[in-house]
Length: 374
Image (tube, rainbow, N blue to C red; front, side):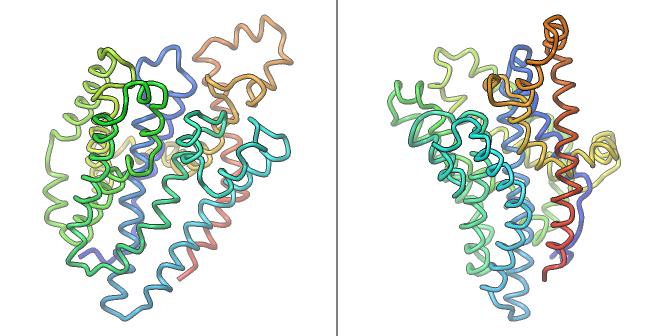
C-alpha cells in the first residue's frame, strides 16, 4: 500500500501540457489538422482526474478505516479543496462574460453557474459559442460531487470491483446510443452522447483502476510499467480508429466515432499516465520533465479555461480577443497574420500571458492556502 498522500508526480504536469496542447491544436488549427485531436486531449484529462482524485480518496478511506477519521469530514475537505482549485477563475470568466455579455451569456448563465453546460448542450442539441469547452469541466465537477461517496463509504474489498463496472457503464452507454438511437438524431445531435457524463465514466474508471493498482497492488502497477509496447499499440489503435471513422459513410453515425474513439483514447491515456507516474528518465520522461513543459502543465487549467476567449476557429467574430485586436490592424498585416501557423503562435503568446497572470495572481496563492487544509 502506498502511504504517501502528498507525493508529487512531476511528469504529470507534462501530461497536462500534452492534453491542453491537443485541444489548442484542435480548436486553432482546423484547416491543417485532419483529425479531432482535441477529443484525445479531453480524454487524457478525464483519465488523469480519475487517477489523481481516486488516489486522494483512497488515502481518506484508509484513514477512516484504520484511524477512525470521520467520513463526512473527509468528504467536506475534499469538496472544499476541489472548489478552491476550480472555482476562482471559473467564476472569474463568468463575471467577465456577464459584464460584456459574451456569446449571449444572459441566455446561458444559469447553466454555466451551476456547472450544467453539458446538460444545456444535450437538452438544446447545440453548442454554446465560446462557452463550449466548459462542458468537460462540468462533467468533471459532476464526477467530483458523486464519486467520493463510493470510495468513502464502500468497504475497501469492493474497490477493485467498482472500476470495471464504471468502465462497462461508459462503454455500454455509448454502445446503447449507437444501436438504439435513430440515424437522424445521431447525425444532427451527435454531441448528445459526446458530452453525456455517463459516456465519460469509463475514462474516470480507467484512471481509478490505475490508482487502485498504484495504491493497493503495486506489484501489478510495476508489471504494467514494465510492458514495452501497449503505449505505442494504443496510440496506433487510436489513429486507426480515427481513420476508420473518417472512411465511414456517415460522419457521426458510425461505430468508430460513437463507441470506440473514446475507449481507445482512454486506454492510451491509461498507459501514458502510468508511464509518467513511474517517473523514469528515458526520452519521454525527460521531455515531460523539461522545465518549460512542467510550467505549461502547471498553468494548464488556465490555458484550457481561457483559450476559447483568445481564439477559436468556430467562434471568431465578436467573441474573441483575436477578433477584437485584428480589426485595428492594417489589411496587409491582417492578411499576413492570418497565416495559420503564425496566427497560432501569436494567440499562444496572448494565452500564455493571460494564463500566467492568472496563475501567479490568483491560482498559485489560493493553491498555497488549499494545500494547508488538513
